[in-house]
Image (cartoon, rainbow, N blue to C red):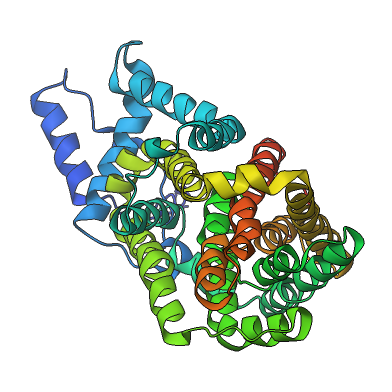
Length: 398
């Protein structure tokens, strides 16, 4: 009777290791004291995330940066990881103190206007563009594609931009019985599109930056016909606007830098990780200097305008922030996008209002509400950014 033999064990599943790890294992036979690279011990997804194929160059540098980050805890307190963490904490502190820096810059501009008159048009363009580049580094191309798939948010923001603010400007000027030149200036700035400062505040508030950029571009492009139409109906005078000039300027200081930043974040993440701790400081400094420059150029008119115009402008922007958020939430928009819409509606392109008032209205005092608007919406926006930055959204839309 033949002996029964046990069945041979089932073959183990084939495991394919990267060639680099095989070489490492072979090298360990020659040098047992050499530890294997950390990358060979890490679990990585089998397929690329978000449909993005693996890349070389900057992506390889990003992978090395990830490995170094994992090894960072073994460094001492004085290592590069500790220095970068300290820089990140410093940037967070500067961002949370944003209202103080902007208010201080505006106060100095009223007290010593020459301190901010050195800022020329070229410096303004470079400062805003570099800040927008830093904002774009927080995005990816997938984020921008997602924002394009939010027609409800874009439509709601556009409608609220050109209804809440113009109607608020008209009603506030009537309730406070402003003089004709101040009422015309208040209505003019309420009919202007959203300014680039709203994108910076959205970035600092950790809201939907991609949606903010698209809303700014949309409202600015539509300002070619919306600003003259609304101003003529509510203020009684027509205002000429250069549509191509507005669109080109928006593309230069908003769209192009943000797209470049998103590309850098997508393909050169290692470089982005290196410079990202500096971006909050650059954003805060840029807003403070630009607001100080706008106040310094109209310091005498602002000081002589009295409390009435300051109160009217403050009420205008308070209505924009409040109704922009409340109406967005009523429409069922998620918290992050509602915060973005609130910032976009509450913050206007005051510099455009100053230029249009100076060029198309006979009384120079018409530009005073526009100049005061730059400080009011910056202070409001900085306060809102400081509060919302420390209160992350908790709804499922996020």
